[in-house]
Image (cartoon, rainbow, N blue to C red; front, side, top):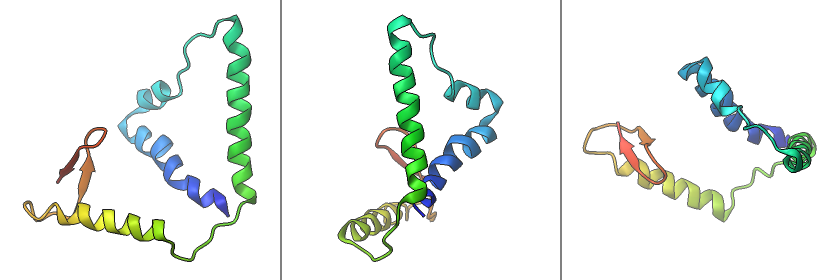
Length: 102
């Protein structure tokens, strides 16, 4: 059931990038050429990523609201409230911490 948590990541990683163009997906998947010592670290990285991804199939998700859930709702509501100037309810992240209302 934990795999459900990966759906937003996969949608951004493959869905959004494919909308931007085939070149965007290829650039995101690009790894620089590896030197001799880096090859071992690369395979450790690949195996650990695969293990994390596969472990999500065996995890459970608690659906009971928690304090973190309430905090997320509060931040989301505050973001939406910061957009009344344009009459829009859409907020777009334009940088590391910049929010622009559209």
